[in-house]
Image (cartoon, rainbow, N blue to C red; front, side, top):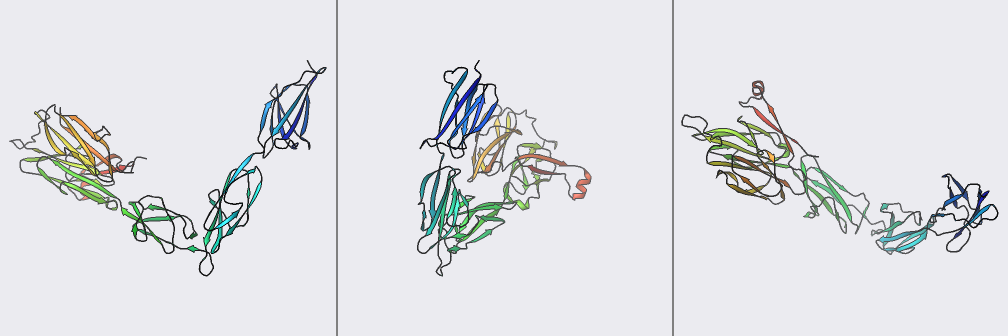
Length: 446
């Protein structure tokens, strides 16, 4: 076995073959251990060892890293010798310069490559009637030091911002107004603001309110939020318009009778979302049987109270009296079966309401969303079903079918529902009402 291994490292610049000092060379041995050496002023380093060296990694800030295997020449006596010639190329980074307003830069607007670690000084000169305002470095607003020094440790972007002078020779700042119609906040991007700039703006509604649109100088503009406005001018006024959040209660009936509020669609403001009381009164020859709430059957406490923090469908079920005055329900044994269709949100179904069908008949029901709404799902007999707007149900028994609509862009306007029964005569006495109250609470999906 040879007594020693000798490796001569010769590190040069790839563009000039001049030796590079202070290059770190990490040397790996076959045993797994390593050694780090540094090249001298001529770019050379020599390592001798009694253990074979297998690979290396050469690094120098501002240059590309080189790695490789150490290949030995034929032995001379008892010594293996390897000469490793390494060419390091400078790392290049790009500086992209642009501007807004009238003026020029030195270096000029455009893209230029520089060696890594280089420092580039950039000067901004305003055009006639304009003033240099500030720099934007890598999309972040900087100050107005001029010239500015950019250290090329990575790719950079640089923007020179020029603003017009006022008539008195001052800077061209302008002062737009930001107002709110309704309840919420309007959040423009940080100033200062200047003529011709693009303005970013965002609206944040208060609880119980929804953002509708922006107005620019009194005219409807953008329903997008956040949004941008082009070509900002002096004296402009921006308004964020908010509206109260509303919930919809659709009341229907099956059989003969009336409800109060009456059958139909009722809209409640979010801040009015307290207990909404609905009563049912049967017609002659009928009796009030029970409520159907969002496709789920409930008992006959009358009136019923709903907590309107979400859209709901409510159906009053009236059934005919027997000759002896008893409930005339058929117990699902007749040749006719009843389909009750409800709607939550804003939309329609075809067919709709309460319909009787022959036993075993297949019925196709189609849901059509109102403008600004979309169909979400069907609920059959209290259980989630299809999410397509067309469904078919076989009338082998009485069925309930609920069509749920949500606003476009609202992932969960209608959330899961929990019902809490507030029971007991003491509660009724305290509330000062005759019936028990059902309070509907909403747990929003996250």
